[in-house]
Length: 205
Image (cartoon, rainbow, N blue to C red; front, side):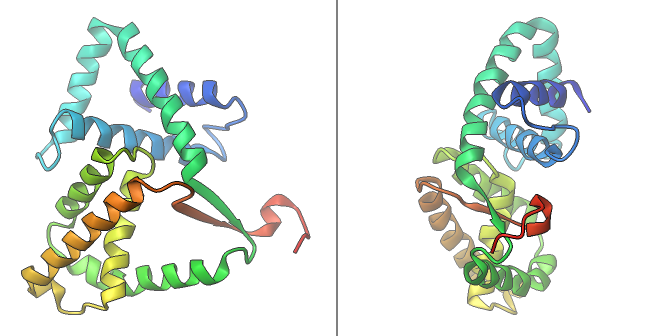
């Protein structure tokens, strides 16, 4: 773990002392770190720039050396806001809860996987969608949402030859950007995590 991950982990623990950051809730930390990176990429105008992650690390190291208190205060505010979003945006689906909606979304994403893997510059496409989400106020799960929005659009359209058709790919991107703007301005959960009922040691139906 680098120093930023450690600091974010500490701030998340401050937000919710019950979090097991190094154990069962480690995914929360991983998503928060990725979101913070994307947030900085957007505000430091590094979206689409080569070696942007290295540049972010360099900038943060300088800030940590020169004004650690400022970085600490900034992270405290950002993590507090992010965790509020996490609580709003992430919903656990226990057992068969939401099975129909989940199955339809999962099928569209699965259908899109072969196409997604054949697309060149998918990282650039994803970063454009991430940027749109952040610009419209979404700071939680940006990487996950961007990728799944693109895959859902591909899956819904059942586009098989899109890798050879730049115009159709551009249409998919535009549709995804429109949906990402709408999604960022919506309320309620956007990320659904399916959990087996046994995880909670319950027999409730």
